[in-house]
Length: 62
Image 1 (cartoon, one colour):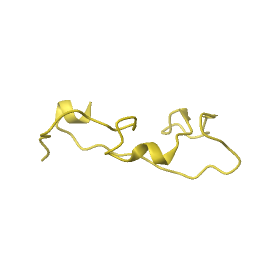
Image 2 (cartoon, helix red, strand yellow):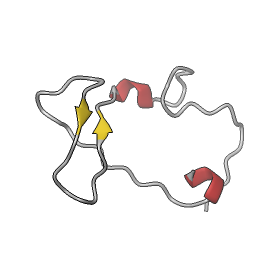
Image 3 (cartoon, helix red, strand yellow):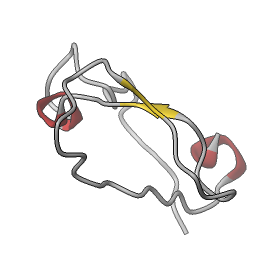
């Protein structure tokens, strides 16, 4: 969505002790949405199986 709207994207990456990849997480704070633990190795851009892999050659950023 951020690329389509040409807006900055923010993420909160937090270590969650005692949880494993794929576990659901809920927070007792109204500004944090329920989420799922992801494997940080999937964040590498060159990995075609990665979370953020894009098959685009040019991205327009501000």
